[in-house]
Image (cartoon, rainbow, N blue to C red):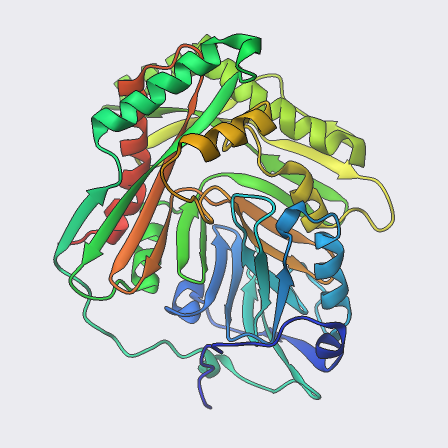
Length: 432
């Protein structure tokens, strides 16, 4: 069958366009779990974790959000568009039927969009796989060969790196932020998250599917994503909604690994004991809990964080779980709109920190630290924080990493933390 190519200018999501579409989901009986990274290819859509995920190609519908998440009707716009698509779904599992996938900007009020793929392959934690096709009239009956990957192309083998700020300039910016935070109520801020940008230029096009395959090997516990060239491996779950069950796993507080297990164990114990790191982490957890609590019959918030270990760093993490009330319960995008941005990527208080970021950061974050994920027609969905990420276009990759600045932050230590976080993507992008 003919492979599904990307559509340069898909139709906007008005109700008439959505009502002309039919989505058909059928189970797949496969000898092994589908390789979602390969199926998404270089031009597709991907959101996949260790327990399953989604890979899509083409665009049956684009759902425009001119006011971004800042528009109070954004979640309804997406839900109404998905509901207007006629659906034939044999499985009725989360991620089946029509699904909207997107990477939203960090700035809540920026125009954004979500895409309903023409062809979507999904797999869940049990290994159940499915194929969804979306088209006009009668949805096309396609097989996995419709998602055939592109022919192999040579990867780049020469790279140059440049930063928008020197180390000295970055440290000066952090020192100024520390002074602002130390101003206490006069400054309006208790914490602000500042980010650094590094640009990689290669001698040939950078292939997203190759970078994602490397990230999967390096960070198997993370959530892989790719939307419009924005890709990464996020360790941080912003929100998951499956029926009435809601989960969030905020991270804040970071240490590097030494390579010596005994030393790393001692450093992890120090991270757990650090008053500074515990305070910074608790601020994020309390913000998440405050946003979710009014919507829940019950909400479990552990008193103490745990250590989340990745390849080169460890974080403090707290898994927040709850049961949503209401019938139907709030959908995933409504929950997302209540949570983003958390203090982990913006600061405290949010309005003051965001204003400070706009004033001092010398670049536009774009989708960095924004939400990336999906929602289906039942309102189920998963959204990660768009960190450990890069925006790839041709032979250029733009990497961004951020750190939380509080009253006792040390500029040189914060610089070192950005280098650790940038290394996550550099290890997958730069292969000389």
